[in-house]
Image (cartoon, rainbow over the protein chains, first blue to last red):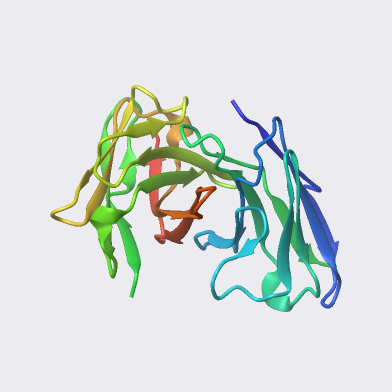
Length: 108
Length: 124
């Protein structure tokens, strides 16, 4: 089974900061990597699919990069509405989709 | 608008059964695969199961294999999750989500539409 890890598990940042979250797969997954944002008490929201493609309606301050085993989600200038938990998810193995453990972004 | 609405959650004793439903609207339900994803209190997301658009294939997480069954009724635009032999560790918010496939040479699957979730509590 493909295992996903994320770092850091949490971070504190200020509005306007550049934020980078890393996701690593236990084996190569090419670009079969998606990113989701979840706010407390709400359903997850798709941000990025196929490692770097921005979902329709998602602000351009969000970007994704990487391939193989190492991936990055970057928020270029953190906004108040971006404080949330972010999850990566692999879809290389579509018999067993796997989420990362999440990265919580809160206010410094 | 595109919408998924879960129902059927509640409090159930260990070993008992529960069936969740997910009503879809605003899109051609029979053209999309569908997922169930759950989230235990204070924990991360856990993928549970997927069913293809026509119900021909179904796959499960190891943690629920043999106990949970995903199904769909395309005539009713509804997805189901039959949960048997429930355990305390099945306590979670259960979300249904639409499977979105994108790409030409490389088809990537993701979950682009989510319901609001329904809460299942397994407790004596």
